[in-house]
Amino acid sequence: MVNMNNNDNTYIEYLNNVVTNLSKNEEDKKKQKMYDIFITIMIFVPIIISPILIGFNQTLIGILLIIICWGLLFIIGTNRRKNITKGFYKIKDAHTKFNIINVNDEKTIKELYDDSALTFIVEPSNRLLDFIFNWLNNENVLKSDSLNLYVFDGKLLKSVYDFCKVSDNMTFMSIFNKDLDINETNIKKFSYNHFQVKSRWLDDIVNNDKDKVEPFKLLSPKADYMIYFNSNIKYNKLPAFFNKHNQNINVDSDTKENIGIKSKDFDDGINSEFCITGKEYKDYLDEYEEELKEDIDEDGLEDYDVEFNLKELEKLKKYDSYYFIKSFTALELKYLMLLALFILEENGNVLVYDTYNGLYYDKENIKDVAIRNGIIEK
Image (tube, rainbow, N blue to C red; front, side):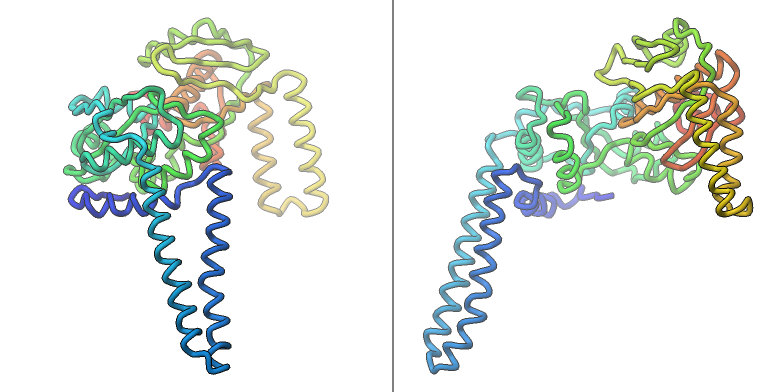
C-alpha cells in the first residue's frame, strides 16, 4: 500500500516518469520499437567501433564518435520525453474538471466499496489531479468532461470496516467505476496502467488486511463461483428477499436457464455464464465419476486427490443444477452470495464453490461466511 500524503512532489515526479511506461496503443508500440532500435544502435556502435579506430591510431575520431553518438542519444531522449509528457497533458487545468466531495458518512463509503471504486491513497493537489484526469482521458474511460472525486480519511474507512488496518490520517481519493466507461475494449490496458499509477480498487485495499486476519473466510470480489442447488426455485420471491437486505433489483430468470440480477440503482449486477440442470447435470456428474474410476484404477484409493474428489462427488450428487457466475466487483459478489442465501431459504439446501480459496460453503456455514464478509448483518 502506497501512502504519499506528505510527499506530493515525490509522487508527481514518480507519475511523470511513469508516463513513458504506460501501456500503449499499436501505433505507439511501433514508435517505441523503432526508438528502442535507435537507442541500441547509438549505444553499441561507438562501443564496438571506437576501440577499432583507436587501435588504428584514430584516437580522436574514436572519442568523437562516442561523444557524438551518446550526446545525440541524450538530446533526442530528453526531447522525446518532453514531447511524450506534452502529449500526455492534453487538457490544461484538468484539476478544475473534478468536483471534490468530502465524505463524512458511512453510506457513501459502503457504496464506494460495493462499486470497487478506483482509489488513490494520497492527498489531492492541483498537480496530482491534472495528472489523474489526463490519464483517465488518455485511457478513453471518461464518460463526460467532469468527474466526482470522493475524499475521506482512514479513520472513517475503519469505522465501517473495523478489520481494515489503515492509518487514521491516511487520505483516500475515490472515483466510482460506474462514473467511468470501462468496457471490453479498454479494460485490459486500463487494468495494467492503473497499477502503474499506484491506484487501487477500494475493496482490495479494505480486504488486504482482512486477508491477514481470516484468509480462509475471505471471499474475493474478482473470482469465479459455482452455486449448486435443486431447481424447484420460485424466483418471483427474489426481489423481496434482496430488498430485505437493502438491494433494489430487477430479475431476469428461468429455473432451466441462466439468471440475471440487475441493480436498479447502479449500472452493475450478475449474469450466470451458464446453468447446467436436469439430465445435463446428471451427465456431467456421470462423466466426472467415470474419470474418477479411471484415476482409481491407475493410482488406487490411497491417492489424496482421488479420495478428495470422491467426497466432492458425493456432495454434488445432492443437487440437480448449478450456476457458474463470474464476479468482478464487491457488489456482484454480494449479489451472488445473496442469491445463494435465497436458494437456501427457499429449499433448505445450497452449495457454493469458491474458486479463489478452493473451498465449499454449504447450509452449515454459508450464513457465517456471508456475515464475516459483510454481505449480511447478524
